Image (cartoon, rainbow, N blue to C red; front, side, top):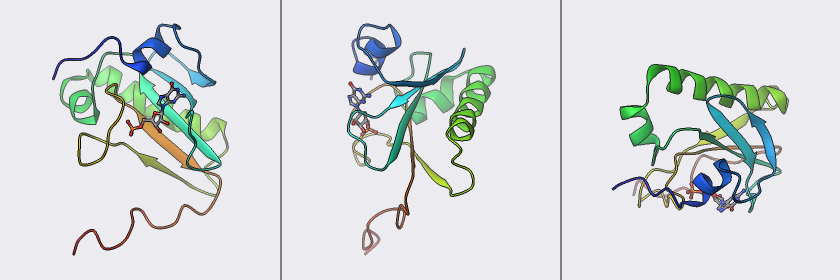
Length: 123
Ligand code: 5GP
């Protein structure tokens, strides 16, 4: 699969579509999810053209990868999420229902998030 420069997050990065920005630096942009699944639901995306966690981890530079993950922590710190905790999720590919083909992490917080996934999937 090739990176589609017309995906929605690419358009947000280029400023063609508005977003509710939470944080930005050289490596990452963070903004509120348009359909929040928790009181805090922030998406963090790298500035580079990467399709997924798999693509970013395999082909991103060390600088991009370290800068991106440090940005994720900065977002959590800026929102003061450390004390009560938060969840970081990345959906990769079809089984995980990845919808937007620009790599992103979800930061979820602000309430008890329950178990990691619905029970019974291993049966
Ligand atoms: P995925 O399933 O790919 O991991 O999640 C994509 C996320 O992007 C979803 O939670 C969805 O609500 C969010 N999303 C889709 N389009 C937009 C948009 O235009 N703006 C924002 N802020 N979030 C979006």
